[in-house]
Image (cartoon, rainbow, N blue to C red):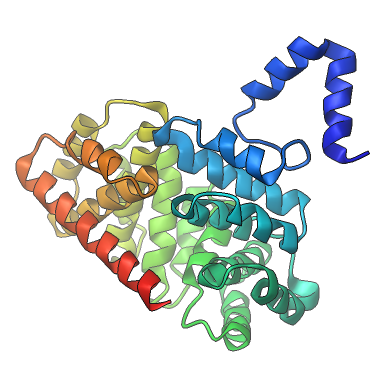
Amino acid sequence: MTAGKSIRRFLVVVCGLGTALYLLDQIETPHPYVYSPETAAARLLRVNEGARWKAIHGYGALCAETLELQEIGERGLALPVTDRKSFYDGAAHHQRDPLDDLAGRVDEIRRYIPANHHELFFDGLMKAIAFSEAEDPDLVMIHAEELEKLTRSENLFNGIRIGLQERFGDDMRRATDLAARYPDRVQPALFEELGWRWGDEHALEGAAWLEFAARIPEAGRCSFAEGMIRGRLLRAFAEDLTWWPEIAQFMKTIDTACHDSCISGIAEAVLISATGSGDAASAAIGRVDDEAVRTEVRAVVRRRIKGKARRAWQK
């Protein structure tokens, strides 16, 4: 008997058939032990569009914690093309500790994961390393150079930033102090991610940004503001909250040199939450009441969509 059938039988015995089916239906993220790849994909597509990317990302994370890479690759292919990146991103950044056989894990990724998502999984390996060695930025960079040689990736900054954020994001002052010890070229990515963590968990306040800006090197200050906006907006989209007045007030209180970063933060949140839907992106942008800002955000979103389409065509 499979694990999925065992779970379903247990619920039926304990709760009764009707209650068991109801309980399973209330779980937004389908467990891979319970649902086939096709059934799981169908359930995820019923999730509210603004929250769907998060549910699919969570599904990918759950698959990484319970399945082997071959099965993860197959489950991703059961999803629509527009939703696969969210799934593979979740799976990539919840991989098991790869340090025992880094070269072997890289080979498995190349064998079982679609080629256009390899970079996500290489980032995920870097994230696992950065998480375990977060207190020693110099050692993290040594491992990054090793992994770059194995994968032929130009950089793995995304993995480093997620590892640092997950390890010390609940102590933001310590996290920002550690990020400041990385090379300047790495800092914008690290501080943008830390800003996301703060925005995901807090209302946007200019005073908070000013406090952190005083301890963040110049190379990362605007990136931190961008991340704060991205995190707060994604939370607002998922919970269907009113968000523009809060964003507008925040943009008025922080350094004007960070204006473009704020526009980028809004655009990125729109792109992530829209999951490939032009209508959803347009609706989100339409909630920006400031015409000048709305025009800038729309231009950035269009430019990034074109860039993604161009890269997909090249592959």
